[in-house]
Length: 111
Length: 114
Image (cartoon, rainbow over all chains, first blue to last red; front, side):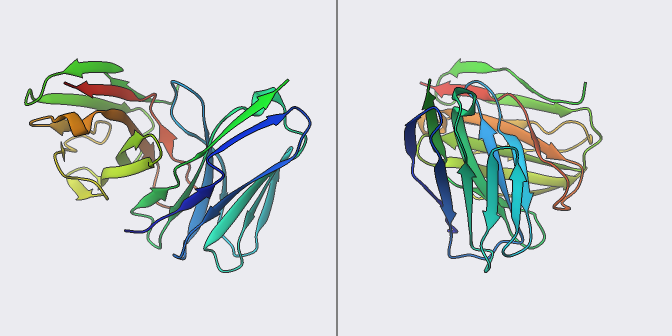
């Protein structure tokens, strides 16, 4: 079974702090997505990365895809209470038929 | 409004009583998928469909069936539910498998099997 390991599982920080979430696998992915999920809702796509070494920025969020396309990270600068939620990474293999998800990182940002 | 809808949103049932969770999308998407979400395990893919009449197993297909008779609908069928199928279920769709096509998720169906 292919695995996508996310760390940390839980993160509780103060408003204004920085944080990084990691997503690691022994498998090579053709693309990797990061999602955010709020209680009672389905995941919502934040970004897709496809090229090894790629860095994408979305306001205060920075996403990086590892050179070997096996790992990724999400860095949030100056976290705000509105960033609170469950962050999920998901990897797709060549062909894209199947997607595997990490277990998620539950982030809580205190005001 | 472009969306994926699921029904019911909540369901409590008993072991062995057949049930169907419906999923519909209004975006003319080719690819649809079902996932279950369990604490500590993330989302696991149950079944997916490339197009009408084309379906295949995901990572956890045991105990589930699907059908894709129309492009917009992709129901999930539990012929004989068991307590280990208690979970939060999500249907998702995307235009195609091209990486730049976003996958849209429904709001989820919380199923409890007693």
